[in-house]
Length: 255
Image (tube, rainbow, N blue to C red; front, side, top):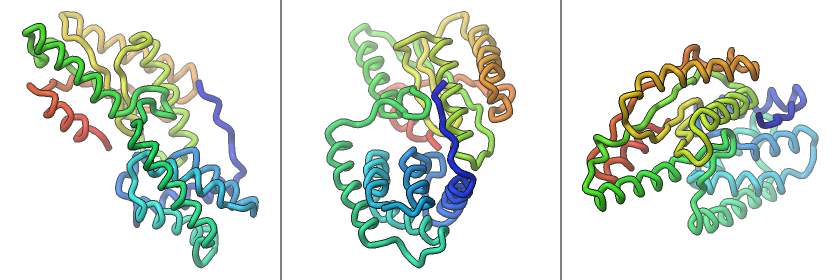
């Protein structure tokens, strides 16, 4: 499991306040708000250090995640107001924008394929693997709707603490990798929501029961059982006839 450091109590409280207010006012997708860069910025602000470097990294992270510059600026403004400031310093705001611009260039060149919290693939990675499956089906004359499906795993519970969410995502990521083996197409689609690309066979029902038990065991062993839905909600999501529709399906499943 990924080692997650614990911040000071004031920094942790400020981070929670920032996230809660931002999600309620300016943030569009609550599931993708947290990034380690938010933690770094809060710790720098709490320690009264120069926040420009941390803001630059936050700008990079926001851009790489597809967050618009206006949303990123509004979000950071929430932090400084929560910390008792009238507004973010110009130097820090400029650093955020510069980081966002640099992140946009990197994101355009190479989309991220690994989710930082769980170690699983990103939605973009899953979409690419689906493209390969549909391409193989065309060459082999098979039908993806009959040969493949997505196993959806939902362990989400309401949780405002980013470190607890990181622990949950890291644990479930480890559980899914150990259950299916290295290299198997698995992605995190949202906080506590995962998708596994599987081949349909007669053992599918039994496999789901075993997977549910495996997730419970790993959650208990790593002491995050209280952070996960018990038991995990599992279901089979049928794939559509074309890759274009499959891409839309992956988009619709994200939260």
